[in-house]
Image 1: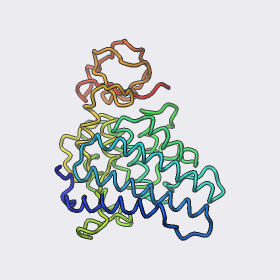
Image 2: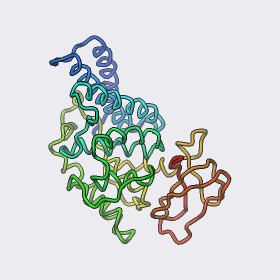
Image 3: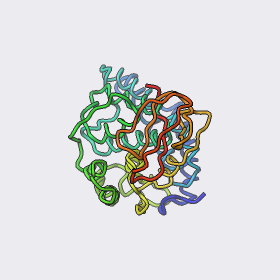
Length: 313
């Protein structure tokens, strides 16, 4: 393995995996301090979700193969669902999200990181399940970046011109830029300002804690997802927080037996009836029948036209 960020050593990764297993075992018998059994269940569920998210970051940062992330992501979405269910019982409110994305930038960041992992790993099924949690809590149609990440994959999303946190302004501007060069510049600007903007986040500066610290990686996965979805040239982006190889993985994923992880080149027959989109053209999402020849956008600045699965509805 070759680590994807210089601050993470192999020994740190091995220590993390060892401690991760130990904590999981400890959680089976340990009671969390709380005022009720319902609150205790919610606290434990949230802790287990956070542990697994850290594991996904650690695996990616340490240099594991990207394919290893998919089963972990499947488990993570289930952990969010369990946490939400227990939190709703504890708080006596059914439509509640574990992530307060409107109030806390680091929790919003976690939300778009998970959304982006679902996108870049070609799992619209997991994306739909995760977004259901925040949509039901009242966050649908409230934030531009949230909606722009979803609208090419999930039907019936919203057009909105407002967003919760200023840190995301350059990334949003990159989506709507009128030139390919300007979009790339804004993407680069976003990556450069990303880490300083999260100085209040609990993970900020954890790389300074040394071998036994809590650092598992700093990743602006949402920057990669936007570049992938909107055909933004990232060839000159070399910032540490930009997940370049994950974006390349998303772009180059070959069709498999799983439709959720498939792509079709223009000129080839559609492999599955349903909706597909291409980063080569704005608002390209459309319905194709199996066997229909996928069209090409010959005047696209993006380059080759590649179609990606976007669901059956």
